[in-house]
Length: 340
Image (cartoon, rainbow, N blue to C red; front, side, top):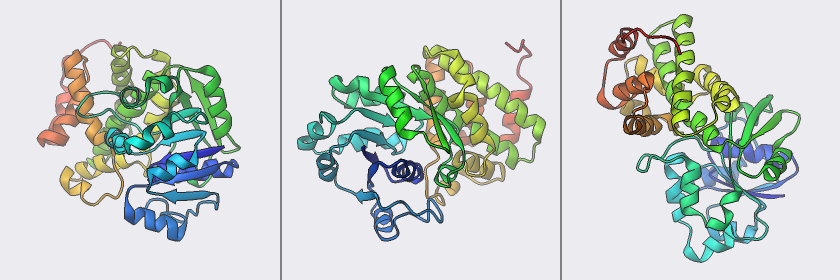
C-alpha cells in the first residue's frame, strides 16, 4: 500500500516506521522546516524520537502537490488536534479533489486526540465539515495506550481503530498489525474520540498530584473517578459505555497518567512543582493536547450540564491560576454522595 502521513511529529513518525516495517511505502508531509530538514538529513528526528532511524521506504515532503501525485491508499492525519482544520484548509483548492477524491484512497485515519477549541467538536466531526461528503464513510480514528517512543522501539502495543464500515476496519487492522502492534476494531467512533481526548485532562491531573508529592492512594482515586467523568461525558455525547472500559478509555488513561513519556503528565507534574503553564509550554518541543482540550471539555460540560469536578479543577489551575493544593481540598470536601 501507499500511505501518506500528514504530520511528522513523534506519533506520525512512529506510525510511519511501523507501516514501513509492514512492507508499505510511506510519504510523510511535515510543515515545520526545521523538522523536515532533520528528517531529510537523518532519516529521523532525534529531538522527537531519539536513536530512531526510519526505513528507506519512508520519504518526506512539505508539498501538498506531492501528496496529490502520490495517490495514497490510506491517509493518516497526525497533526495536533487544534491544527487539523487549518492544515486541511491550507491545501490548495486545485489539489483538494486530487487528494480526497482519488479512486485509490480507501480510508482517512485520524490519530490525533483532542476536541477543537473554537467549535467544541471531536475530530471526526471536523473532518466531516472539511472533507467531501462522498468520503465521510472513509473517516476512521486510531486510539489507545500507544506512546510513540515505545511503538518506535517495537514494544508490544495494542490500539483500537473505529469507524462506520466494518469491512474497512478489518482492512485497516491488517495494515497495522504485526508481532508487536495489534489493532482491534470498533464501530463507536464517538466513544473512541472522547476517550482519547478527555483522558489527557486526567493525565494532567495525575502529573499535578505527583508533582505535589501525593501517593498511590491519591492516584488510584484519581484514575477511578477520572474514568467515571470520561464515561459521563461520553454518555452525554451518545457514546457506548463499554468503549470506556477498553483500550481508548481506561487503557489509554492508565498509560498516559503514569508514563514518563506522557507530555500531559509532564505538564501537570511541572505545575505541581510550582511552575506556570506559560513557563512549561515555552520549553516543550511537542504539543500537550490536554491543555487546550481541558478548556474545550470544560466549556462543553458547562454547556451540557455534565458534572466533571476533576476537569473543572484542572481548568481552574491551568487558566485561572488556582493553587493545586486548594483544588485538591475542594475536590475532597465536595458534598458526600453515592459512588454511582
